[in-house]
Image (cartoon, rainbow, N blue to C red; front, side, top):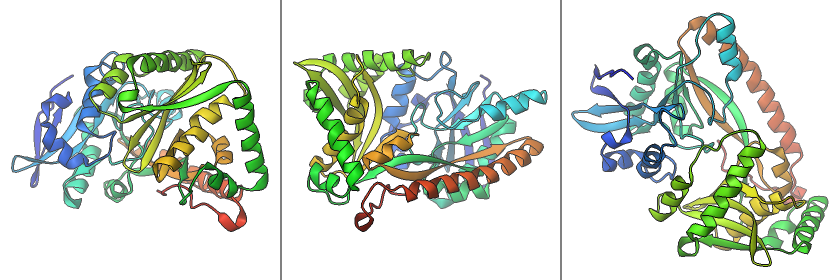
Length: 392
């Protein structure tokens, strides 16, 4: 890729790097804070294991802002020639561009690759630096010859700066669980409506009747053999859907061995032999549901392994939130409630920008109506409505 060098914008100097290794880790971490998926170690591990790079179509192109030689803002950004691994779907936009003889790709994406988790994307020392970074991203399309810039799963503190810079907001929905001070799993179940509570207990009994038992593995308990079994299941899940896995076994082994992520493996076994597995990431008071796989079909096994066991883990360990991953209104029956997610989009072609803005206005009305409908199907008792996720 060409070298775009450094540009001076007022008090800030903008620079692009094609690998995180060109940035001092301590300087990045000061801006990134404690979020596990924007940490220097996590993003660099994606690069050094080849999960992002030329072979996967995720070309690292991180945007940096300096003030008097000090890094004051950064965006984990990638030059992309496809839309895979983003979980914000814009393929219809690409088709519209092509239908009019224009190229949608390459585009610039500010995101955590393969990770549909809300978090900071404009890593900044202060609000002034954050606003400057947002404006630089909008201007960057002309510099790097991209059709558009997309900031995915943005944190609340990023959105005002992005809108000010001309980005358009887009809504999506995920399903999160919140710990309302439950003392045990039975306490949680008792607050659900009778029909939901009865169904979940039936599902758990059925899975147990097939001989399935569970272990929660983390820290020193989590061994290479467990991660190798997980990875075989992970690959199988993608294969069943005619796609390729995004992450390598080396990535998971190193993420655990080097303590890049605090992995929690929920292992389903029968007679001591592994049957299914869910991989979560623990950080602070949150458990992030990330991946799952199985070697056989057992009715209800997916829900018990991924959701009920994860909720039980959160209750036992005093965690406040469980983020169940992208999509899936079926998760509501397990006490996960809808939470709005936001992405932000800047399109260089003003004609297409106007058309997409019109589309997003209509889509927002539809998403808001969808969330209202879901809220009316709240699985908790009327006198014990859960607060749901932490909100947008």
